[in-house]
Length: 261
Ligand code: MG
Image 1 (spheres, rainbow, N blue to C red):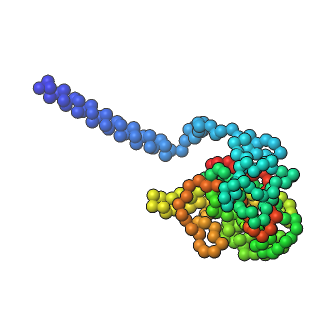
Image 2 (cartoon, rainbow, N blue to C red; image 1 turned 90 degrees about the vertical axis):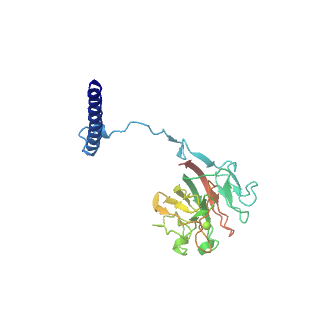
């Protein structure tokens, strides 16, 4: 009889505890759904974002990797044969495409990035359409942001300056005068691929041309082909590439830095 009473008491306690736990959970959920009345309830204090400072004439963030400061090609290599860069290093801390010497690319591989790059078309007008100061910034070695002197120089709009070549027409043409410096600020997020090699998340890009938003979180459909549709082969991190279009473009670059995202 004594044992029976003990078991009954334990069962009653256990049932009561389970009931209380369930009630507590309901109370917590209700509390979360309720509009907070205390400002501290919606404050988050940790983790603190890292501190980044922006100093100097070129306004380079302290956590950026400087890819070109005008003094050397140390961060770059020829895309043709991975040897030294044959482009022209200028006394004004810029570099100029040396015609038909091939594209150049970073020695480092990158994924998602914030990229700052300044470029200048040739002062001298040498050709028309796609052959006037044509170059380009290739993200992950395969997705081209077009560089072109489009001032009084029509071409197809999905291949004009600031386009994602043959994929995304820019929202505006924000070019400087021919022969003057431009800036591109790019926010790029890589595509993801599943185990079967299919794209599970497409790449996206945002582009400011001279501070003007011209590509607004645009989806990249695949490689930016001159002929044919975009391709989507699996890839990982890859170099940033600058184009020698082979038409005596005379395009120059300066002040290139990147922040890995
Ligand atoms: Mg190009």
